[in-house]
Length: 327
View 1 (spheres, one colour):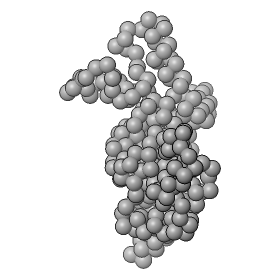
View 2 (cartoon, helix red, strand yellow):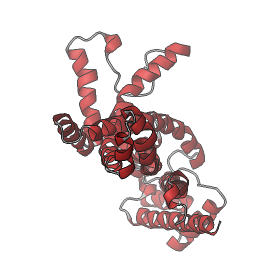
View 3 (cartoon, rainbow, N blue to C red):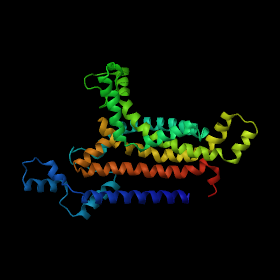
View 4 (cartoon, one colour):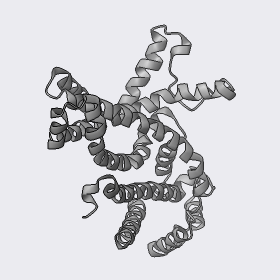
């Protein structure tokens, strides 16, 4: 119980430090939110009036105290540009990012663990070398570059090559703006629009998971109990199911916990390229507009997810790996 309390307190302190640093860096960054909100013909007096309305004319310590007090009360403030509560903007964008992130995360680990295990079972072979080369190249590829490449091939390229329209993959948005599909047709339209964004995140993520899973499974395959099981004549599928994957599970679960918030954060470029109205696109728009409350609200959500995922993985590891329960 003491360990749990200490870890929770450490997580709370870390979250507050991250948010405080973000607050200070935002104020130090160039750009005046008030100047971006007024029309080009506005005078200096108009800009000063807008700054006063936003509370930006007050000393930095006063702005920080107001922000901190609001956070402690669960109030993330109001968007400078949208004039809506930040919680409402986040609530609108979060389901889009969660749907995109969870779909890609599930595929990432299913494909990544399968490929990594296949490589480990055939380590040193031509297939292992080829898959290692491909996974390394894909993992190193920037997500925005991969997204644009997929659009060039499956959207514009498909149209240029005369591929039937039903087989072309749309590049932008959640739905076809020219159609008002409902029911199953609407779901199908959403799935078609989701293929390229999900594929972009999955390809990069699965490549990284495959490299990690290969290393973990190779280590487990070299342990004595695996060699003993094989010497006793245990079937190969049983060795992998009962011994290899069971002992590779703890580090893979920790990786899953660490990857979960990263999927939301990593979708910033993907949502921007594909014009998906999720948290990533909201964050980019808020940064461009110097919309401090929205940036701080999104940062609060991202940072809390990362820290909570780390905490959950750290606390779950002893239950998954009995060898660590005594430590």
